[in-house]
Amino acid sequence: MTTLNSALHQHPFPRQLVFATNFSEACHAAIPLVAQWVDSLQAKLTLLHVHAAGTHLQAKRSLDSFFAEAAHYPNSERVLRSGKPAEAIAEYCRSQPNSLLVMPPSTRSSLPRPLHSSLRAKVLHDVITPMLTLPHTDRIPEPPSTGGHVACWISGQETRLDHVREAAALAQRRGAELHLMHALPEVSEGMLIDALYSDRPLSESVAGQRLADIASQLGNELPIRLHIGTGEPESVLKKLLKRTQASILVVDRGAVMRKRLMQASFNSKLTDSPCLLICVPPREAEGRDPMLPAPQSSVFGARPLPARRLAGIAQQPARTH
Image (cartoon, rainbow, N blue to C red; front, top):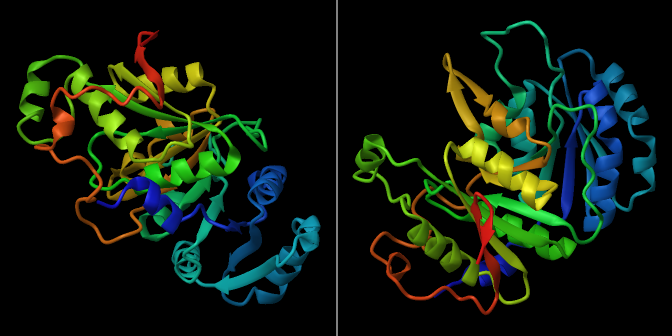
């Protein structure tokens, strides 16, 4: 059977960073972070700007002067596209499948914008590459160049594990510890009804076994910790991120996308976390991942956890065993 570990080597963490910029303050503030990622990942850097029709010369001047230090990076390039930003960015990324798209957030407004549609959400809906985005904060988190902690959120509703592969590849590349996180629902009548229509684990032992089964497929070189909490998912995640001091959070695209008034938007509780956020769309065709434990598999049985290589399962409230 193909393991997550073998798939990890077939799809290594992206070697090209595509920095989509509109020359905003947020884009300028992200330059030091992008430079650090280029250095730590030894990745090629592409600066991408999409301009409106008739503004090519002005856009070229702005792009040429933006992030001047990028000229010193090997194989760096500046790419201009015209058209609708979301469509042009997604189209360019389709031509660069082994890349990581970097998109800072738009400027936050103090006024309500009921018909506003997030550009990041539009791009993420169509893009086939992972997207690195930043929280709405004055201080952009800077992960250490080596070591540190990478968190991966497993909601239990995914049909694929592409985000787990990306998180493991990133942690391995950085020499970081990987934290797999999951939230159990509070006991209620609704939870019992949910069990009829979902494969999501509903008990601590089953969830722990499921995470352990996933972790056991990632090879023996990567230090992994498993974390399970009970309660509202975003609240549990916030507590777990604080406890683990993770600076990078990797999530499945479905965990961050929201539909409001027919407009695409980001889950604000995730984008407001103190971590850098990497959103991963499915790399393969939609459908159940053959490496995701099936409901009838032994992962739902009582076989012991592979404790020889797992650092432990941390529960919420805190207790480790």
